[in-house]
Image 1 (cartoon, one colour):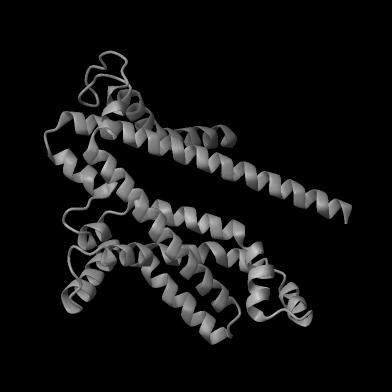
Image 2 (cartoon, one colour):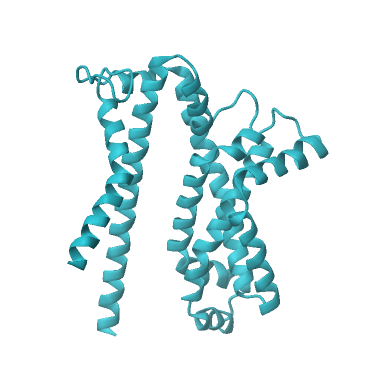
Length: 271
């Protein structure tokens, strides 16, 4: 009985999460103009409009460039911070861990407004500059990269680093040749999480972006207030594509993880 209830509860939760997305995906392949209205006929018109509209193309490529660029910076900073804290003394490590938790817990609207006040108002950075926007997304993502790498560092065999030093490697060479290769799964996970956070962010982007630039999140909010039906329906297609890409990436990462675990298990059996 308990098992049946658990299964039903799990199905309900999954339905609440994915049914709305699937409904939106269905409507993206129709001639419908509103979700919940008549489906009309099957059509790829929304996908054609998505890539034919120059404004939408610019918004998508700009969002991807911002997400990849800020995620790369956040990954470098988060990795260096996690490695530095791991090999620091207890007091410094505790201070870094505590400081890293603040941006995670803090509301995005506070972070965005603070960056706006500091850079644009107090330091006089131009409102048309992308510097506040990139810094804001980096501040948002770097703490999560840090948290993604910490578990891998705890699993690390510290004797390998010490052995590399004993064999004549410099600390920098030992870091790049011994430590970082073992952190690659955590680094990749942190990078993907940083990209996702950047793509999804609205509040920090709103406060720090140039007036002529829009990301997917800010564009969608503004588009839903407008009256351009073709743009709204094209965004259904964009949402569907993002969901499909995320599913494919997650599936590939899980397959790679399983293969790595299988290889490690075989290596342990041979040993």
